[in-house]
Every structure is written in C-alpha cells, then in structure tokens.
Image (cartoon, rainbow, N blue to C red; front, side):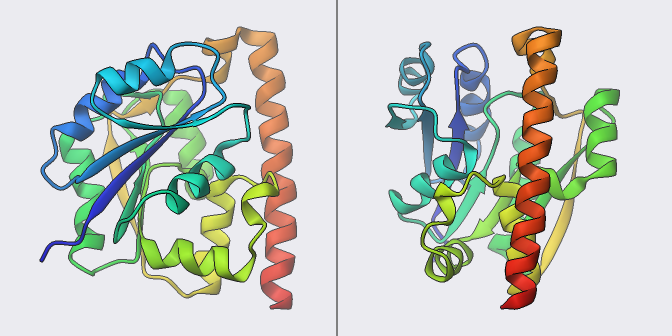
Length: 222
C-alpha cells in the first residue's frame, strides 16, 4: 500500500499566488490531500484555497511559518509530509514528484528542494544557504520526534527550515538534495516594497541566526 502523502502550504496574504501552487499539486497522483494553513491572512487566501479544492486550516493571527507547519502536522494524518511555499513561481508536477519519490521509495527520510536555473537572486540565496529551503518532503515520524523532544518548539519563533536541518543532524536522517530547475519565489521586496521588504528580510535573518545558534546549542547539549 502506498504511503499517504499530505501537502502542507503555509500562507500569509497569498491570494494572488497560492492558487497556482495548489493547481500544480492537485495534478500529481502522488498527493492524497492538500492543506493550506492560513497564517492570519487579512486577504482572500482562505477563499482562494477552498475554491481550488484545498482544505484550509485557519489561524486567526499571524503565528509564523514554523507554528503554521507544526499546526498542520498536528491536524492532519499522513505517512509523508510535503512542504511547499505559497508563493512559488514556475513550480511543475515533476518538481513535486522529484521531491516525493526518494522518500516514498525509502531512499531518504527527507528531501530538500534547491532552486536552480531560475532567478539570479533566489538561486544565489539557495546556493549560499540551501538548508534554508522551505520545499521539502519528510517522513511524518520526523515531526513526531521533534514535537516529542521539545513540545513547545512550534511556539519559539525559530525558522522551520533551521529546526528541520538541526534535527536532521540530531536524528541522523538520510537527506537528499533535489534540484528545482526554473523554480523561484516572490521576494519580500516585491510583495511589500523595497524598504518594508528589506526590513522584513533583516528580521527574518535575525530570527534564523538566533534559531540556528540556540538549536545547535540544544542539539550539542543533548
């Protein structure tokens, strides 16, 4: 029997983009269910997701991506979790299946998708720090282990990518990197304007650095 796969898409004010991602995911026969976790959006993200056929889990205030993902995990049932950002550009069914197949075939416990041959800015960022990619397929038991070892982790404000990267080391997971050619996402500066976007980006990097230092310390002490 094939493992059940759920796709989790955290989204905050992504009414213009989330529908395109859902359409691609729906076209894959490897996906059993799609859940959009609406992270306190004030636009029509939830309505668009529902019209596209996705289930919606709605948070009524913005809690951050890590909280949204763990909330999605705790409120769904599956053997494998596929994480995708809501603002992906040029995502293809082949990309979704390339992320999933190593995990479905038990060649990996986690895959990490890395942008390539797309936009210079997003390609460069992922070449420098591929561990920050939010496009991943992961065995459900990995999330269970993380939640079991640190029950409040979803509330800590750490970047979900840092949490998964550090626990991959701690749990000695088999991790496979998967190229995502021509795929990229919308930059914060494009969504929010240059100044506000740059401020949000610096805040994000600060949280990532803080999370990396604290989780590495926790892993080393454990």
